[in-house]
Length: 116
Image 1 (spheres, rainbow, N blue to C red):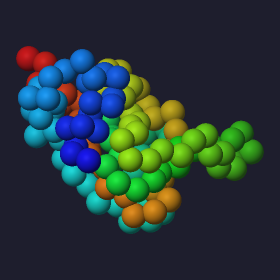
Image 2 (cartoon, rainbow, N blue to C red; image 1 turned 180 degrees about the vertical axis):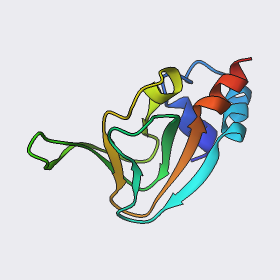
Image 3 (spheres, rainbow, N blue to C red; image 1 turned 30 degrees about the vertical axis):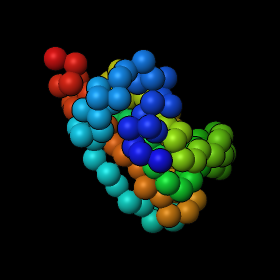
Image 4 (cartoon, rainbow, N blue to C red; image 1 turned 45 degrees about the vertical axis):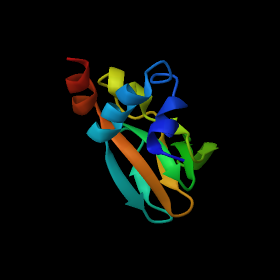
């Protein structure tokens, strides 16, 4: 599946044309991740949005007792970090790959430069 098609599955970008999504994809960067790699950590500054191109990630939070609690697992075409595009807030969860995973990353800076 093409990356522009993956962005079409994201509600924030679903109403855009293919050519508009292509501009967004050009502004994004590609990252290949190893199995077990932490992509974002709970509590860190959020400044990017991610779409899973291939592979799987687990979304987790730390419990009050310090244990990791898995909230969900995301795969191809699913996304995380959308609030980082819109708000200057910390990450509410950690995201870790469960297998070799490729993601496309759109930073807040790139997103807002496209809006101008």
